[in-house]
Length: 173
Image (spheres, rainbow, N blue to C red):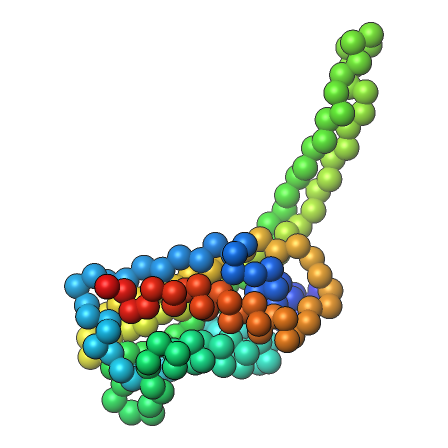
């Protein structure tokens, strides 16, 4: 499969399996008063190669930022926001051993399955606009089964759930 197509599929499936299943965690600088930030602007990170997925990710992130009280501005923001996407595949091997025959002291049967699993990570960073230092990071990871026909509406809905989970305790106390 072409890299861009596989990348879209990987990212789409990352979000299609729900926030509860995705490994979502957050880190922040406890010395920074993040609740004092009121405005943000975008910086370019490692964006999704598929322009439709990029727009979907940006839209959902902006909705979440607005819901926590941050306003998008063109000039002089309090924080810069950027996201990174990493996509790839891992090869997995699964061996099912159905037991041994006592009479023949040999395996009765077994099967070996070798398959590729799509994996993906989405990282959302916030940088203090004055210092350029990182002040907050959210990360979502998930192993992905193959699905050749992702539903864009479901992908966006699940992406929203993952973002809500990231921002559940934002700003940190």
